[in-house]
Image (cartoon, rainbow, N blue to C red):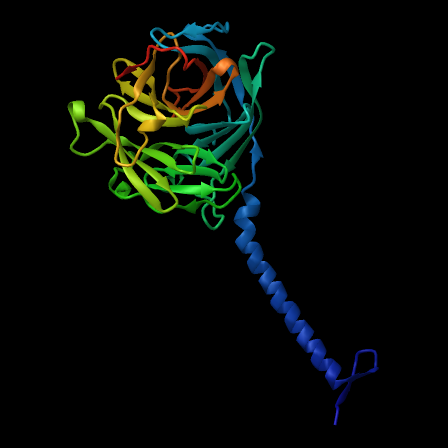
Length: 361
């Protein structure tokens, strides 16, 4: 027998209909609870959007002049074309440690406080860099789209770009994360052998893609037990889960901070030094592509020393862009360490590889 009951308006409702109504109400409650759970999971994503940021640019020429005059660096094939000093009232701005330039005018920089900076390079009518436009800032995300909030997780130091996206190395918790985009999850790659032994602030400082799916990553510290003429920095060639060690010949005064691939497949290495009496200095060295082999001791050749009248600060990020007549534009960015005594500089150089004069150093 089917039971019946009265509704509020006095009409009859069969028991089967009551049952269906109860089921529907229960389903709605379950769906509502699920929606709340999903919203909670997606909240970090929805709140982690790229935001516009105001940046003020001041032109910098050789010797601190505001007049953009190219300066030929002595004994080198490098010319300083000028640059800009960047400032912002946004507390998130600063600490820019890695750099790539895409399409000739899209800047992507990474901060050691856990942020991306995306902007367009703005040039004047004769091609001098005069500022940035359309600048946006975005936090780094973890593998579950969570914002990286602690310094030990945020300390990004170098960036490489490939057809698969961006690859970013981090210090303190030494690792490399792969990103399909700035708003994507950062997937941690297979750890490089021995990297966990590095000191907290001496991890991977230089990283680039080699043009064939492989990458080269360099550690800031000297390899253990190597001094004098045998001194060298630890590095790894890696692809997927496979890796092979290399050593980069160097000295204890200058440390790798940036690496970029040149149009011909060679690499340009940026190295930085600091001394209390003389302040910051830097140099470019070139790594020939045929030296980049598993187990190799790589001996770069000196390209240029960067010193006054070129403005030099804590130079850390470097990016190469093909230019006309076989020349290459080199962009370099500095890490101000969020210090009032340092600056964020974006410098531009012209490199003429066809001119000889480079030497082992």
